Length: 73
Image 1 (cartoon, rainbow, N blue to C red):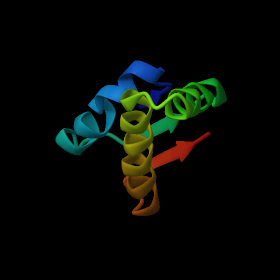
Image 2: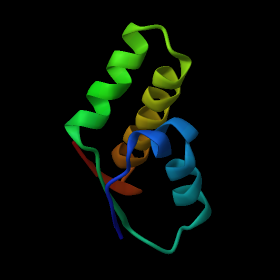
Image 3: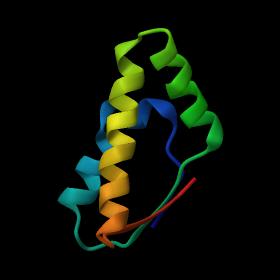
C-alpha cells in the first residue's frame, strides 16, 4: 500500500498507529519535502505540532529501519 501523508496526518500520529494495527500490508510511505519543511517552520516558531510531526517521522524511520515499512523522502 502506497501512502503520501500530509502534515496533519503526521502531526496526529495516525500513520504509525495504523501501521502497527494492520500487520497484513506492506506499506510504502513517501514523505513530500514540503511536509518536512512545514514541520521545520512550525518548530522554528515554537509550535508544538511541529514537534509532534517530527516525532511521528522518527517512529516511521524506526519502522523502516526494522524492515516493517519502506520510507522515502
